[in-house]
Length: 295
Image (cartoon, rainbow, N blue to C red; front, side, top):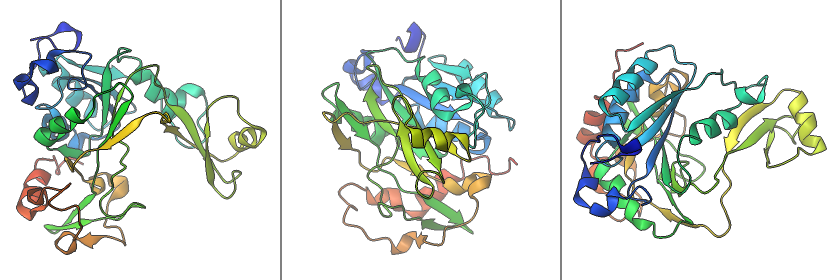
């Protein structure tokens, strides 16, 4: 059966629906993946998407922890996934050139996904419930529809599980992982600077304004931003993945606002959140898939 580029693909829940054979269908999105030094979580995360995602592009940059080797091995085993090594360094703080900026890198990886096909952003410090993920793809009917994957952030310490609170609560219905149709989609630059009203942020969608130009001359951080069209209809998935932020060295520790999972009580449980996904044994079992011994 054909996957990305007409190559032999693996099998999964998509094998049960012939509509998922159509490269133009939201049931057959490209995985849009970016990696930088995520060797501890990378293979487990990639393996978890396989029953839901048939093909993908895996962009990577500045990797020195073994992530590149993991990506190349995975793509050799599953050739419908394409490895893309970005030829420039990516710098968040005061990037030297456009090609060093995150938004530019993001668009470079995106350029490998054909126009007129769907793609879903996936992060590699997550474990996905492939059945629930694939089920969520059925929500989209029109090319203007967008699916956002709801999320929760889980922290493990001494086999106790905690969840952290974002600006949207402990259960975040507006995560940055989205499924969308690729019709001239692109990322814009989002700048964060003390010259924009006390480290305010602005998105550059065209020629910079004078205040933006001034911000870009000094101390600033450059990120990517996506712009939602006003005519898009946004759907929210049920909880279909686990995010483990503190496996990354720069995020080690438990946030001050963390709540023991056993104390979490939300009206979404039983409706948007399958209670089985919050079982301690389930979460610890998934967590054990990571290569935690890797430095």
